[in-house]
Length: 176
Ligand code: DAT
Image (tube, rainbow, N blue to C red; front, side, top):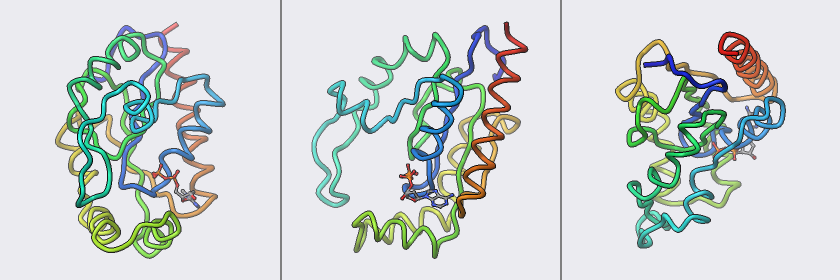
């Protein structure tokens, strides 16, 4: 359910790697005072990574340990969580979920710039084309709280930051 007793909301920002989650979260966190939790970095700092996946060339997340480590923060509220997956978080953690979307030619360029190539690049582009994360979010959370946001241009980024910031301000007003 989206209703909670939290004075400050918890937001999930998800989507394929490269769609702009971190850029967006950093700005929203700065304006609203929510704490930005970049799950990959948090997992690294809190020892929640398991063995290295050779195929994808990235470490595997220990999801159970991560959830334990995050529980207290999430129960307090006031967090903006940034991750390219969303089906293993407790539904009760989030008041709203944003799925960022990017056209695949743009995404291709961004991921190439990040140094992705081969299977890792192809799989991520396919992930976006097949709306994998959007469907994951729709299957994991109430439809009313899941919102898609286009993230192709700086103007769209700015508009997304403004919309989310306004939503946070309204939430805080309603819950104070
Ligand atoms: P993510 O955290 O989803 O992996 P990011 O925030 O690191 O993505 O962004 C990846 C790159 O793309 C980064 O160089 C900033 C750029 N970018 C992201 N969203 C954008 C947008 N809406 N317009 C222009 N550039 C964008």
